[in-house]
Image (cartoon, rainbow over all chains, first blue to last red; front, side, top):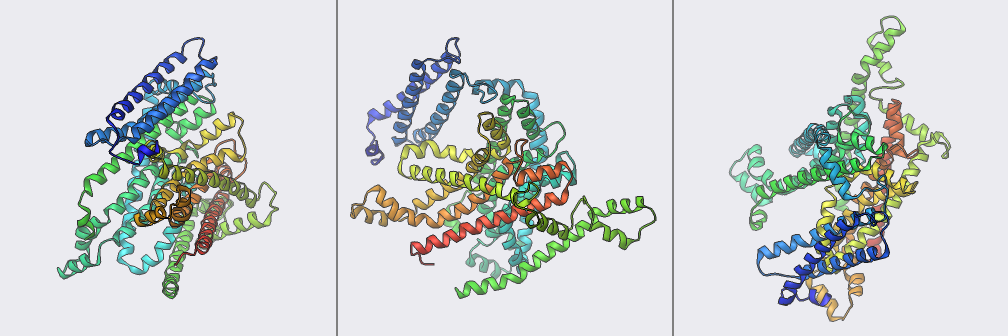
Length: 332
Length: 295
């Protein structure tokens, strides 16, 4: 296997056919087993034959993944497909094993519901999930995210303008970014009440420091030569900032924006553990967990994962759209 | 060395200034935040209090909206050192509970992250199939669902330190994996070719070339990981099951409106975080000396 990996681009044509065929077979076998396990006689009382089949599925999928990973197709589209197919296969395998083990072994739903039950719950609980999403993501996470990033950027620019402030603020900011800031949630709930403003405040505080640290590093990123050039054009501070230094800082700003995208949702949900109105993802998670309705909890988790990944993906897309420049020009 | 010392000397004064300004703002916040409450309390006691009396009262309330810095400092001193460490009311007891879960989680997470990184560097199929999921795993707000993990693990019969440590480990494996992969692949082509001409095996190349070269990146990642581990543990202590730890202390303080207790617990958490990061820095210096790195 390692021998094949060492000669990229020389995979024989046989492997080009065999690997996708193996992957297809693994998918089909997984689907068949998942359908089979729900039949009476299997659910909760699967015999050794079933478990042998499950282990076989695992083996088959692993083989297919490693064969796929060894492929180095010439065509860019095919390359992209391989790049997506390998992790997708792994994800499907995890889901299938989860379903087979929980249903086949009859794991009680209060411990670990199967993915199918979670999917059903996700669809059935649509309106509740939507209301929670609006409360937690749209009302709390987004405004807090905007506020934290903007104030962080503003303070970074201010500290850049006033050197003494910079030398004083930056060590403190570096220290603060290692602190467990989510802990301020109970204080914010006490100050701003149970509804979304307190959650937005927690999110703003959480996102403030990463942006401050990254923006400061980014503002220092513009080269000496370019700065001197701007100076020789008699450019004002504001012009240099707008035309040279902020564009040069964009990669740093986006690093902070991406980190903060995940932090925002986390902050909003965790803050809800300290008191909420009767809507919101954090509220639903704690209340349903107390009722041992774990399928609803997992549906909320799936929603949070989807929202978090989508938010992150959007920021990453914006990054690609705004910073697409040849690297030679960026570092010249 | 000397330039470094001078640079630091130039920083002490501004940092002190920022900290002082922060304290001043805090006192002002305490004054304004507690004003109505203090004035009401005095008015209820009878008479019309003067401005100075109200101002003094804002600094000494039992459950202030914004506790004054010295109140928090007093509470910290009392609950850290004034009580026996075994007492449930001692902050030192709660901090030690949190610390042990944090360290356990950090150990598990760092070991898992390190193993993943080594596997990713050596096995192509692992890299291809796992790396996207490792990145995706971080966009999942796991911290938010931490309490559920605790509940689920508790239902499975796992209680005590381990469930919290699992959350902490989940948070800290990612920076370790990413940092270590970057570090392990950092040696130049020429150096790996040299190892090959020595006919060094993969294990030897790993131990003698890749790992030493990865140390700076590894320790940078470990610092992030240990801080993340503490956050994970504290959040893991929030749900109903936890009776001890800084997180439980925060929650209890929020239920009973004990603001000073909340603030003291927060500062204890901050101190703990600073201590942990400092410990990793110390280990870094030791490792650098051990491998004979030039600074």
